[in-house]
Image 1: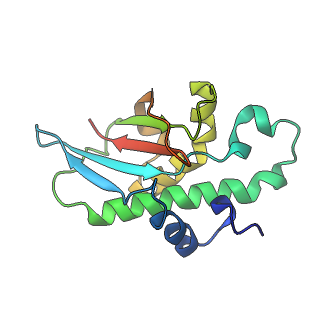
Image 2: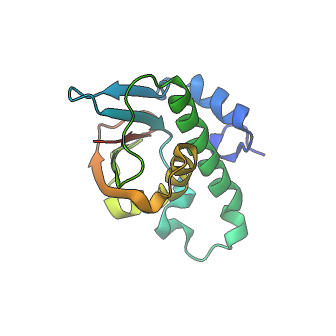
Image 3: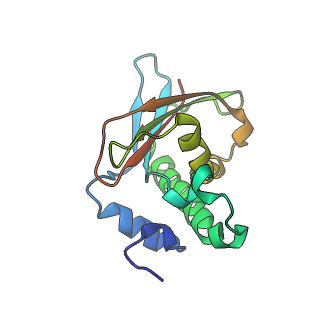
Length: 160
């Protein structure tokens, strides 16, 4: 197992310890909007290169299984951390849940927005699981590009 690749860790403690110590990943934060509607803001790792659709073509599903499981685990763990620290109003999770995804790429390489969304699927599944909401309720989904950040990041804002 390659200990330099955080995506290969499968335990919750390993994922949290690895990302807590990283400069590019601050603790998950919760922001309150001026109207009193909460926006939960979660900073996740940038999707692993192996998860991008064009890169995974021709590979056996089992070779990507550990990477997918680790991404789901990271999404769940970091979202659960944000939810446990949340105090104040919550977004309404019984209706459609607006989601804003800001992809802060690790380099200036051109990446398609639809491929970045597809690569983030397992991270978003972890977010949905931690929020106890079906991910089909994530609507509308807004995709933005952020600044280049060392190591990359995916900033997820749940709510208005």
